[in-house]
Image (cartoon, rainbow over all chains, first blue to last red; front, side):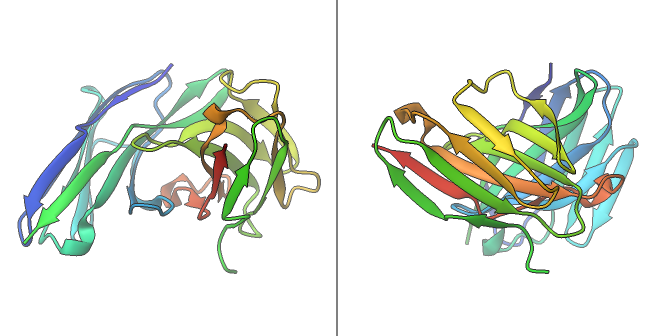
Length: 112
Length: 115
């Protein structure tokens, strides 16, 4: 099976940098995703890592270490609109099918 | 293309009734997924289609749940004899095989309340 662990809640100040960590255990690892979900809305795709290292997309960066089963999402120059839940999701083997399993999400609150 | 569409947005039903939800994926996407999400939790996998074939169904899903994708386009999810524990947001997502780096595109969801 797959197991994903991420902090439940975080608070950060507008304009600052915040790092949201995710640790995972899975068989047949084949990629890690980060999604953003505003309250009452659907998740939206942020990033995908399948190889070790850092992927940068504007204010958002995501890092992966496969040997450590670890990823983080880095948000720079925080804005109030970044207040949302951030979901870590892992693709791995599940009975011959590559299934994507989501963590419970980290609720980020950005304060002035 | 307007993205993934789900209908209805909200559904309130009495315990014991049957409900059916519809999902229209992005037209060129051949993969379609159903997830369920409760408050404070991440989306939980229910089932997955590639074209019209249902390739995987969660073991957490009871026999009261069934999904179809008859022509490889839209999909329906039916819940029979609803229970209060079925109250959740039901999310549909689609993707194109071989494009994992784009992730899934989710619809806005159907919020089910069983009273």
